[in-house]
Length: 283
Image (cartoon, rainbow, N blue to C red; front, side, top):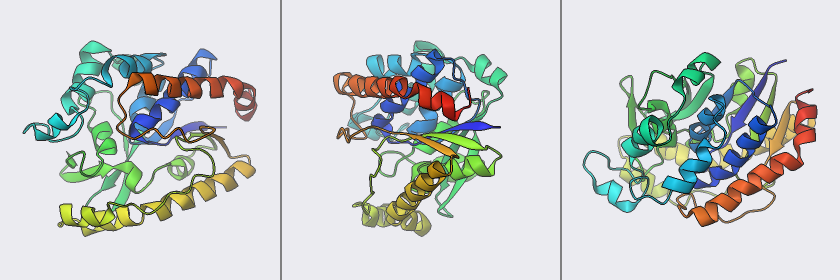
């Protein structure tokens, strides 16, 4: 039986997931497969390298650092994104809170990020490679319209994977995974509304009409996924872990005083449901 972890994105809301991942590792639960979109896979790689507390340290020490995120980063010619890309994806993992690339390599590099091809408007899934010290796949998977520039990989341009596959459990199952634990950053029953900025995407990216169409239809995709996920859970093929209520955390929230309690909610939620998690994993 092959198990996988599937992690929804949600930018700053994904600190909830960080709490869950630390609780899993502390309880000896290591699932050597993670697929995720956006911040889901960006935080998920620290689980695959077995670094308990690494994501917590990033939130505590750097989320409110202007080098990490802030409007002034948008106006830097070599950055042009709301997030400081080199700071977040190079300086932190290489120097400030080192990432264990060797452990990730030994684990088999089984982290897969969903990305959106802006020419086709379709999802692609890319393995996160230990040798890519710039975290190019993570940058692409997190590249929200307006807040990021498209990320070039192998001659093509990509943006946020959550646009076209917010919860990539189907990719995991199609890849040979038998059962998945899915971590959401919205409460059960959440129904996504149409994207208010969909029309502006068409204006901002006139060369990529299929990207604009994907953003326009994102709510339909997301709501179909949550319905399918509910059905899989009834079949025993999925276990969903999700916040018990909507905490109203914005995707660019950067205050540790707000974020760390939400991370603790994820940790406590996992501990409370640990028996159910172990039963699902047949432990």
